[in-house]
Image 1 (cartoon, rainbow, N blue to C red):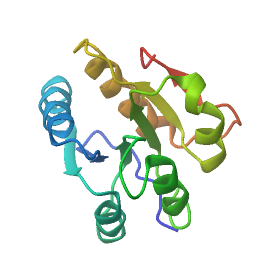
Image 2: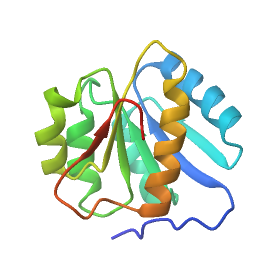
Image 3: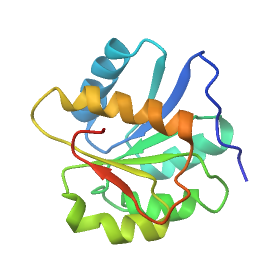
Length: 148
């Protein structure tokens, strides 16, 4: 199993998986602009992302739920076979719609995408929290729209 990255005040390497190119682009711009210690790698294919993850070390994974061919929940199931890296679901779905299944597959955190750009700050804070605290140990999915 791949070890969870540990925070050491250096760069925090994040793999962001989303089938929407625009979402990847905006997230990278806002996250790296808001938090200089973040380095965001992007991938628009969940299958490719699993391959990349086996070749590189990441401190956190941020992923959409609704993706064709392999959705975010199935991605987490496959990732958990070999890694306990913290996973943040970043999606338009509300927490109520996916919380139970997300928790059961091993997702650690949840941030809802909104049209308000301030949610990128919440996502950056959630990434920092995930890296510092690591994967959840309790049975409740940490779920919030504000990321706090």
